[in-house]
Length: 325
Image (cartoon, rainbow, N blue to C red; front, side):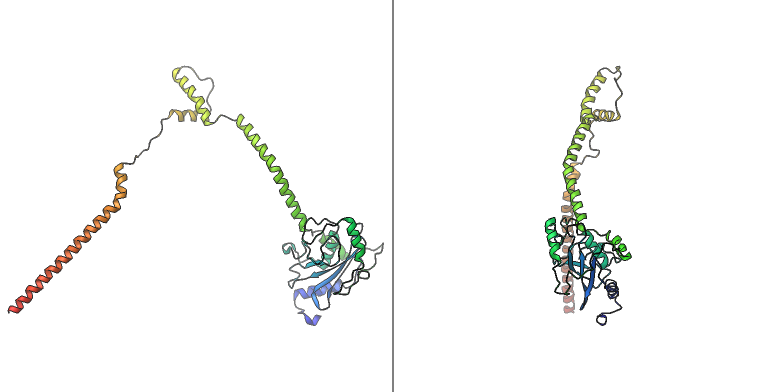
């Protein structure tokens, strides 16, 4: 396989390194590329203990892009499991559905640990996810050990090492588990966003009603409007004019003073009224200009014609003079 690929390619270097690290199967996962394609891997993972997938062994494919590790892989499950659809790319923040969340430090081992960790979670409408009942998932977990892959010839009964009670996790597994904690189904964020939108939509009518009630209540307690102030100030002004010596009962507010001044001031008139002569002269100005231009053109044509006639007479007289000589 080494002679088939460019060993200077970053993707080839990375995949060959990961293939060497994952060559030996473990109790929980195993993955290796196909013999004729370095960019397609087949993996096997064990169902997480103390869950509906306990005792199940699940097989799938990982299709890597040529830009790996700068772009994420696509993950496809081949064994019926009740959590992921079979033969469809699942939607993880580590998968090809969301390249914006992919990190080059993540590896195939990280993806396998993430799949194991998220199998017991709810699908919540994510792409390629399912929400089977616990009974159906347990039944599929028992049947999963009879699965055998036709592409790689892997049998689920011998794909992984048998579970041992005192097995300790390796250091690289612990590091990848910490990275896998950063991975989440996009459905979780989208569902929380949808729930927040729904909650906001449900609370918006009550908030609007509360704001309307507070506005109406506040308007009752606020000062009177300008019209009310005018109505209130007009009787006060008439009383003040009838009895100027009587002092006011209480001082007026600045808003009431402005309203009172507006009622006492006469309506303003236009400072420069438009004269009908000026108004009528503006539309006729283009017509007068056109008449003047026509008159000038007629005068010029008349002068030109007169000049031609005089020249004609002059040439005729000159010809007669020479003829007589």
